[in-house]
Image (cartoon, rainbow over all chains, first blue to last red; front, side, top):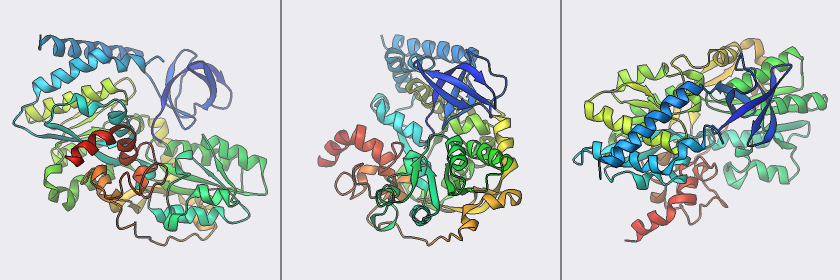
Length: 78
Length: 379
C-alpha cells in the first residue's frame, strides 16, 4: 500500500498529468501534488500520484555518508 | 533503477552491520519498532534481522492499512458491492482481506458483484464518467500517503459534477496510532517487548514531514528516525537509533532526507484539509478505537459520502479468537507465536489480515523468515 518507486519524469502533460518512465516502462501519473516538475526530475510515485520530488543533492549526501559508515565498519574489524 | 540499486549495496550493508555490532552495548537490549509495513517487508526480504546482533531486535508495528482495517468495514463494502446499481472500485490489496464468515471482496466478485481493481483514484473518475447511470463507489484506504490522492479525486469529481461517484472512507492517521501504541497499558505489560525507539514511516513522512513526530518524542522520551525503504536506509536508521539510545537522546532524526523535509508536502496536506475533517474516533484492528485517528468528508462534500448515501451501518465483528493479529499488530507477539500461523493461516488461506497484505508481518514472516523460526520453535 505504501510502497512506491522512484520514477523519472519523461513528459509533462496538461491537467496536472505527466508520463514517467520506470525501468523503461512509461506510465501516466498525476502530478497534482507536486509543483514545478520538469523532465529528468525523479519523483516518488504512489497509487498513480507523484508524492514528492527526490532531491539529488540529498541522495548524494546520504550515499556518501553510507559509504563512509560502511567502510569504517569494515575497517574497524580488520 | 536509479535511487534504488545504490541503496542495496551488499558491502556497505556488511559495514553498517559491523558498525551496529561495534556501537551497541552488549549488556543492553535494543528493541525498535518499525511502524510501517513497507519497512517490515524490507526487513524480511533482505534478511536484515540476520545482519543485526542478537541484542538489537525489531518489533513489527501496525503500519499496514489493510491489516488494521476491522473486518466489519470489509463486510460493509461487500454488502455495498452486492447492490445491483453499485460499481465498487478498490485497490488490489483489499481483494482477499477476510471479512466475517470467510467472505471477501474476491468472493463477492466471483459471485457477480461489480468490483473493479484500480491503480489510481483517477481510474475511479474515468469509470464514473464512462458509466453515468451507475453508482461508482471508491473504497478509500490508507494512511497520509494515499489520502491526498483521494482528496484530488473528490476535488475533480466536484468540479466535474460527477453525481454517481461516492467515497467509502477508511483513511487513518499515523501519529495518533503511534501515540496509542506508546500510551497503551498493554505495551507496558508486555515486558520484553518494551519499545526503545521507532523507525518512522518513509512515504507517510513525505506528506506530513518530520514535525508531527516532535511531540511524540517529547511526550514519550523515545527516539524516532525516519527511514527510506531500501536496506541501506534501514541499516543506517538502526545505527542512528542505537547511537541515540547510547547517548540517552530522544530526537527526531531524518535518514530519508532525499524525499522527506521537516515541513513535508504542504500542497498535499492542503488538498486533504480542503476535503476532509478528522473523525472523532476510528476503530483499528489490534489497537481498538483510537481517538482522532481517521478522516471523514467535510460538510461541503458530504454528498460524496457513501456511508450516508447508502445508509451503510457498521456491525462490529469479533475477530477469530484463535487469531493473534491484534497482538501482532501491537508488537506484543511475533507471527510465529500465533497458533494458526503456517497451519490454518497461510497467504493462500489467510484467516487474519496480517497474512493477506504483503506488508503484513505474518505474510512477510511466511514468505521470507518462517524456516528460521520453525527451527527455533522445534528446538
